[in-house]
Length: 227
Image (spheres, rainbow, N blue to C red):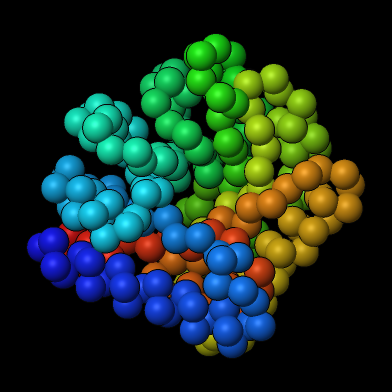
């Protein structure tokens, strides 16, 4: 497994580099988040040995157990799954980043429950940019007000937006959806919010997302394999 994960990481990094070159962007402008949900600690250790330090988790209790078992490694943990109210304390106490803030109540609880000895929790607001019926996320119309309120919460640092759009039939259609998210991101920046993170693109649509301005891609299967 170790060799395979290292080889897969190398391949994904090369794909990111190629996509950046095609978009006329520097490679360092896009970071890689390895989605390690459902994979055990040995898979994470293998990815770390190959140079990966940022990991994304969807299932909070599973992630907390994993974080505890890997405390000896200098890893950065990102919560990228939906958060119920009864799980906000676990997220606030254990994660470095949250990508899936989609309503004010969750943001307020994360801020209130973030331990004082930890740095502010880095957060992205999840936007349902294409109106997918099964997707979490705030609507584009409600985004500006939520972003302004979240940016003022004392124990959070608003970094940007996250999207999980529905698959599109063509690359052009996929790029158009990502372009909508980029436009929302730039609109918030023009309103004075110091945003720097657009968490957009996964294994299947990574190149399209990078072409439209993603700064962080979330890749799981292409690194760890099929579950």
